[in-house]
Length: 147
Image (tube, rainbow, N blue to C red; front, side):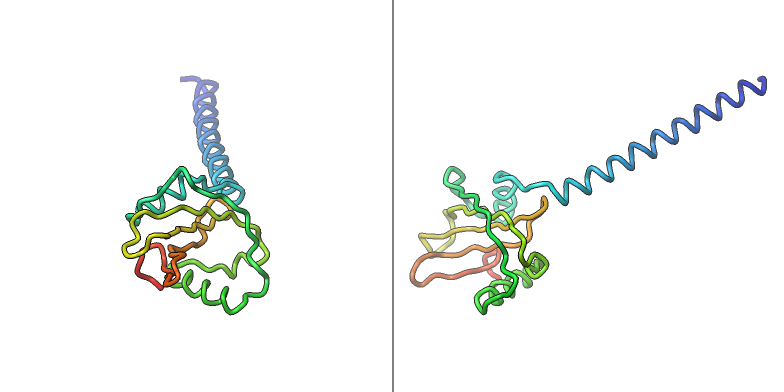
């Protein structure tokens, strides 16, 4: 094979490697921005809760934007303590506007008026709870046991 032919094969190989590397880098950047600017849909939040065994009323879901306060009151400190037990930490989101999905829960044993809250920011779930609005209400983690 001539020298010219060998250079062509090397150039083609280099081109293919370059394309593969570029595709990998573009995919990495897209996934990064999806995580930073993406969003969790109502369906995603419902699916997350259903993985814990919760039966939800999907037609009555509410989506709100809430602001995590800069300074936590005693109530927020207790709420964040629950989040920490679940592996979340709301202190990272002080002053941020986050999305809260609220679902009615059909199978929270012993409680008729049960709700599930899922907090999301930047394409990921950052916290939430299962609670009862009954007078003898309770608030627990997603597993229904962590309080």
